[in-house]
Image 1 (cartoon, rainbow, N blue to C red):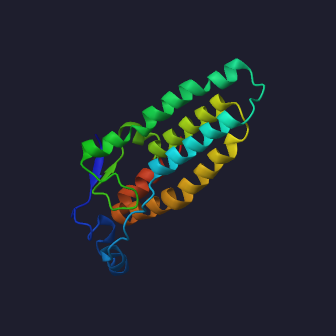
Image 2: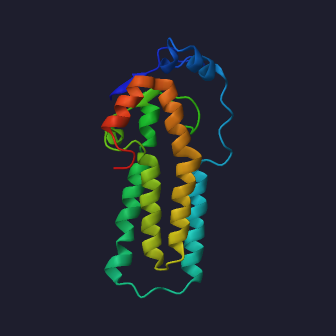
Image 3: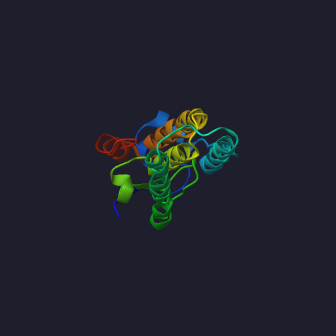
Length: 178
């Protein structure tokens, strides 16, 4: 597994700050606690909302093949979201918006910088197809916007601060989604 480790694994001395007093000062400030509502919570809230909408709303006259195509998307999404286990194998933190000790760049992280979020989006797309109602699509779009703004943008900045050049190289090599 290809990984980049921070030279000092404490919460206060990430690699990117070496020799940069301004970055060092910013990096030594303690991070705020992670949000109380994490991405999996938002995922299950979106999932529940979509299922309720699918149950209450009338079915759209979609062809069977179209709405059944949601099943493999749900399975694929769950497999991608399971990339979380790579964090455990690397011995790094998986809680969003907290400092990581290792930059995981192997496995699915070799072709997507956000495979867990991508998996959640793909699974919700599958649910939207299965429910056969257009009412679920705005929930999917809201979930995407929320995850991007509340988590992804901030996580990318924190990883850049923590891993510096290694993170920049990874960002150039691997796309955010696919």
